[in-house]
Length: 175
Image (cartoon, one colour):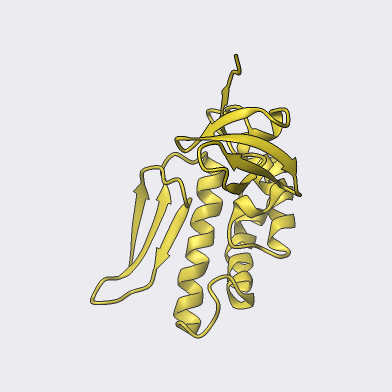
């Protein structure tokens, strides 16, 4: 038995899997604000955790080789039998060659999935270096590009953070 929950938006994760314990069944939650393709991929990701746990218990890594094999096995019928948009199908196929802990970790898949979001706000990569922006209630200065992330400094503490270029931000107009 699986308890499946469509949850409200969470800032830190798109979905979650919890194995059975204390009489509770497998539990999967997926954010309800995701577009249909992100929702599907996140659900498949979490289901792969469930099937991996069923086969191996806690003896394997959460996003290790066994989970990757399970994820691919669960996703293959979807890729072959359900008509996904071509861009989603190609990006998902490519991602499954070496799936990561999060679909957000794969820049190409993440960009394709964002095309189907209802709201696409301003992203950090669209700002000029040195610009001020807000993210999660904090004010930052955009710094140099590292690879897929930018080194940004929080204005009040000068602490450095690596922020994904595709993060949706609020630009602060300088006077």
